[in-house]
Image 1 (cartoon, rainbow, N blue to C red):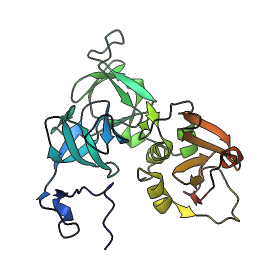
Image 2: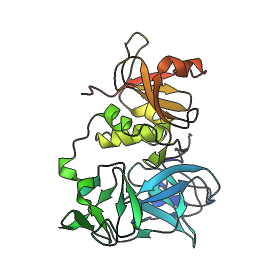
Image 3: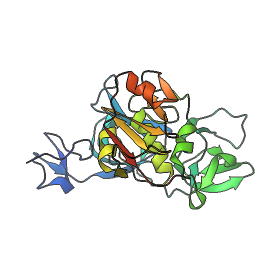
Image 4: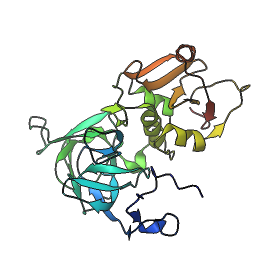
Length: 280
């Protein structure tokens, strides 16, 4: 029997989530505790080691279901995309959020007072969900403390960023970061995930997961169009038109747009094309 993908199923050889009982074998099963991140970002690691592989990033407001707690580390699963990993035990609280707004700019500062002259306490990134308690002039006071510029927020009910090409293009020049999926740094699948999430499209974290689940597969005879997802071995990008690819890549070390043929010429063979649907 094939074991479930441990990237999105919380189990190890010594412990597993209670809901996986009967699906995986483990000496003990635990019911998770939901914590909320009240910090700009939280790095998710493959192992409890800060110099080890970074696999994803948690954003302010993310819910993280914790199955193991140590003095330094939390092991659990991000509710937003189901990804499992270890993150440092800091900035998480049992107090939940009911997000009212999202960060609409690439990133914004959290201030201790409603003035730009105070020293920023934290940096919140694009798409982070915040709960606004009150508005004080140009600033909004957040549940959990701090003030953020009101013009950097959009009410969730009014969110209308549906064009994945436009969204991804906003981050041209952002540095490439393995495991990154925020405006502070991102990898190829992190860029696609961010653009899809902004458009209201559920998107898994890694490129192989995206190739298996997003949109519909196209044939070799289908003409490439704006918004198509192009998959390579271990890589993914978004077509801006019929010939140019927008992608975060280690070759350039940043998010760029370049001819698809240039990417192929470097030895990257296209393995799949998937179409999400019409892009305005």
